Image 1 (cartoon, rainbow, N blue to C red):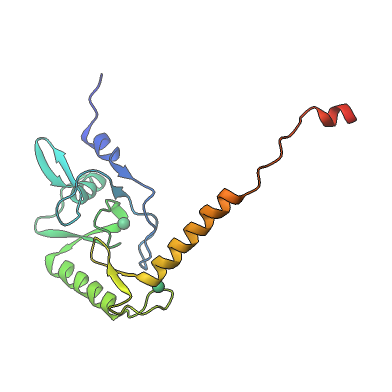
Image 2 (cartoon, rainbow, N blue to C red; image 1 turned 30 degrees about the horizontal axis):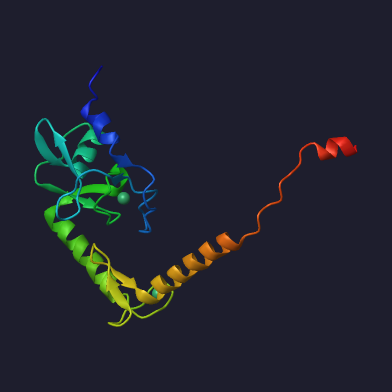
Length: 170
Ligand SMILES: [Zn+2]
Ligand SMILES: [Zn+2]
């Protein structure tokens, strides 16, 4: 049997139905790396016995040439697991640092969740990746989930249909 090419192996580890980016100018779903990641959450891919960064491979594969020496790759969608070429942009290290600092500053300036609950000490917890999450929203989600589960249990059983009755009556 033919061995898969690196590009085929790579594609098999990507979920193209990732989250939709909410950042202006970044279109479509993230292509999420589903295999190994490093301790910072960036995907890793083994290529010819070496470990390479999955997003760098994605850019080089799509462009058909190596990334210019000295350039970083900025995740414009701010999703470290993303390997979608259109969400990635090779930039200088300086620009990359500036962009991520701006992003952190913008995040910090947000004082309320989308449902307008405050991000204060009592109401805030951290997701694994460090982003702030709203306890009130989580409670509401859990409540909705429990209600939905209960309604599912109490749903009336559909009456058994008798396929022949109608024909006989006609
Ligand atoms: Zn993305
Ligand atoms: Zn909330």
